[in-house]
Length: 102
Image (cartoon, rainbow, N blue to C red):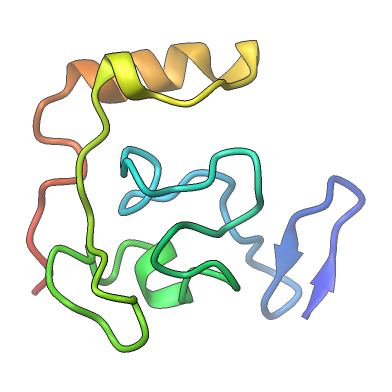
């Protein structure tokens, strides 16, 4: 694993870890200002959850009893202006982050 010049982690030197997660970006427990951490996983969100392979609507090992809870517009944490468009789109899409894991 290595870092790009932009600060993204590379798993196999061909696929950077995305900044936004289909499972975590709209979770009320996500630590937006700390890279890939949340109340459930303060030491790092498991990659299977971050990449959206598991939506964390059900208990996951070592999640401290905390699962996905959709953030509301009023409770969304401070964010960069560059992310405003993406965040607005996700908040307006009621289905985003609600898909069940296979």
